[in-house]
Amino acid sequence: MEVAPEVSALLKMREPTRVVVTVRRKSPLWQVASSTPEKVIEQAVSVLQKKTDNARFLIHEKWDRHIFMVFDLFHTSYQPANGHHCEDLPVVLMFYTNRADRAYMAPLFHRNDTNEQVSEHHNLNGWDREPPYFADHTFSSVPRYPNPRDLKLEKGGLVDAPLRDIQCFTSGTSLHP
Image 1: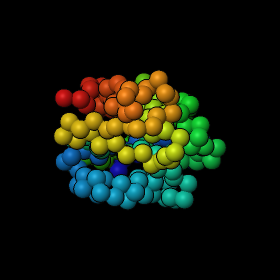
Image 2 (image 1 turned 90 degrees about the vertical axis):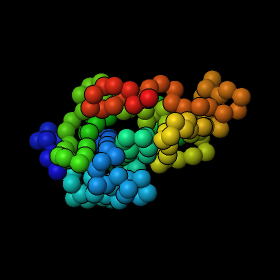
Image 3 (image 1 turned 180 degrees about the horizontal axis):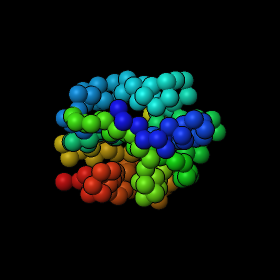
Image 4 (image 1 turned 90 degrees about the horizontal axis):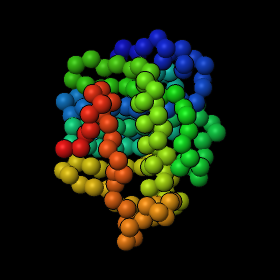
């Protein structure tokens, strides 16, 4: 995997960092990412820093063509009870495709979007659940959330998600059909 120099420099400082791993359907890792995402995260962590003891798995979102996994590194102050408050952590984007695998720093709009998505998942999943959060959007299914933290989101006892389109990290286009 090609790791950008600025990613290596950031990780050497051991500052709290959020990582988004994207696995495309044509990637050899698709089946593993679908069934045992922890193995993909372990592999990603080993590529980035060679140690897995400080990774916290947060989100697994499955779409028809992509699987997104989000985890934090070095985030020792993380508290699930406060996860619905948006943080401003640097974000590393990792792509596993059928061609070239790579890792680089997210541009500002992806950084903001990723941090907002993490807070939204905490909010949607309520007070009783802790990460990792799983959302399956395949086959036009819409995840349902019975107990969101923000009661304004509740509609008849359930919340349908997503609240907004999730953008494809490579093209900026919506992943919704």
